[in-house]
Length: 439
Ligand code: SAJ
Image 1 (cartoon, helix red, strand yellow):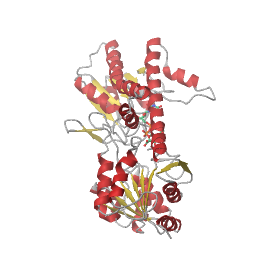
Image 2: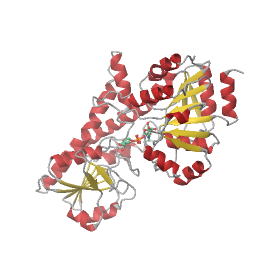
Image 3: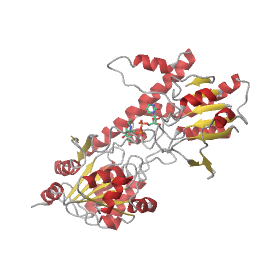
């Protein structure tokens, strides 16, 4: 029996041991789903706080129930370690580490490279292993990173080691789609690689969508997120055009959305946040520049989306000015710092950019976010979320809606605030004395 057949058999009999590198918002839901499916899963993360929490049977990811973690850890179906040596002897390893940008806004592959190095250093690369990269990368990255290391380990991809790219599609806060019911793209270095990965992922995901190559899978993921970034930038530009035309962009969007075909609804906002949409498309535009091609839509979308915090500042300045008030020393209450509704994540959140701009203009800024108890500021001080009360609303010269969390009492906000700049149309359907300026 060859390595490929042995691997397939171990997967199909669920005797395979699976390693997950990176136990964040991608890796932990994946680890839990595979462990629930009956595989023995060992998760590795360099953040010992995550490991300690998991070993206590606790979850630190909003979408992953603590009870599920507790049960799987108690049964030793799921184990966690900060040491890559724990991965020695696994039959498959899924790599779910961050792929952010450098300060120069170019791909930062350091997390993937460090993981690839550590797997080699701990002799995890061995005959019979399946490696699945899930982190969003530039086209060609999976080959660039892993082929040399596997060859150096004396392994031949497609014969005694198997390599695929299978992009994560986690949508934080999405209560309808999770790991199991979101189709999983799988692109293999060879057909045998893809077959092994399809067998593995079929244990945790209902629908597997095979593609012909590593690059096809890498680029499909970039298409998904560039599609969102470009369309969100377009609707942000529509908001700025409608403002100049004196028309409510939210009404125009709802009107256009009555068309039952040919339109996908996007909504304007204070910019785009998260660790994917603002970042992933730039992995593609960066690669294209190296090939002498300008990814014009991606680069323009990035420019428009990054202008939005300044545009929100201009709305606030103008609204206060019309009330005869300067921004300097004005009491500004921000509602929502998370990068999108009903989640606790503030990474890349445009709300943080709005906060920083207002502070630079010497406004007195406080915030309320029911999901974000505090944020660390650039000067390393902690800013705490204030309670949403009559006092905090009435004390504000301007309330700025940046995240339309469901848990916020928008009717109270509308009743008690004097002036509101609403970048999310969160006040739709409310009534009250406040003057409301929408994006
Ligand atoms: N946003 C808008 N207007 C919109 C939609 C989104 O301003 O019409 C903003 C959001 O407020 C947020 C940012 O864009 O700041 C990104 O939001 P998102 O809804 O794209 O969600 P993410 O980045 O958390 O997750 C996305 C996933 N979400 C959706 O497709 C709905 C999914 O595309 C990917 O699985 C994920 O990125 C990823 O990890 O790549």
